[in-house]
Length: 345
Ligand SMILES: [Zn+2]
Ligand SMILES: [Zn+2]
Ligand SMILES: [Zn+2]
Image (cartoon, rainbow, N blue to C red; front, side, top):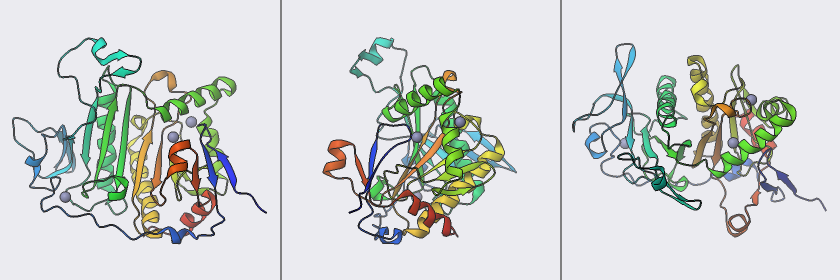
């Protein structure tokens, strides 16, 4: 009798059962794609700019350069490279005028959902998802993330900025046009808070960044997916999702704002490569990705930004939802090995 393994996350008190007894091969996880109903008119496609609120930020081509602008006075910029617009049904809304802090923080269990909820339209081309986007276009997307991160994180009521992407109907993308979302919240979300606390504890004891240690270990282990001059990609030890992978800058950086131009380019290439491998291996599955980063100066020494990618190849049911313990039927070692072998093109 051999037992399944129960693994704990590097930092979070989160346990995963690695259950491989069903003997499924990675390719068995490929699902039939659910075709998204194509709406007659896509509000994100060029020509339909008036279907969205005015853009907060547009990138426009200006010779060899990019000009940044916003929509003003009811008009909409055309011929854009990327657009950032407010979400039509925001989860968090900005302060309209100055209110006192009591209105935001009502008591310890209640506060107003003050913040921002934006949509970044990644390309004028409806289907230009990161796995098949041109690298210069993907660079615009990443620069768009950092521009919004810089502005939103400077607001006094913003404690965290979540940048994430839903791909496919089953992963929550209600519109199929390539887009990401940005939500600025008046509190630090739970998972980030736990990672921060664990990283701070490690720092106090060892005077080292725990993530730098994890990267060093995973670079030389069986869960490495790929490594280049600037980034390391691996399947985390206690992966919750089959084929889950995390992308880390090898240089110690707290948030995306510290990336140089070369790093942005390499990050675009790395992201495209990994998502391309995933697409090729398991039939363009639905997935979510989200950045984990820290915004305050105090966290600079011990927090290390990364992107976590969660393919949606399994369904969480009663056990997972009621306990927070996950069952993953693919070992991260197998996921990494399979991803290493496949080429994205
Ligand atoms: Zn479209
Ligand atoms: Zn680090
Ligand atoms: Zn994380």
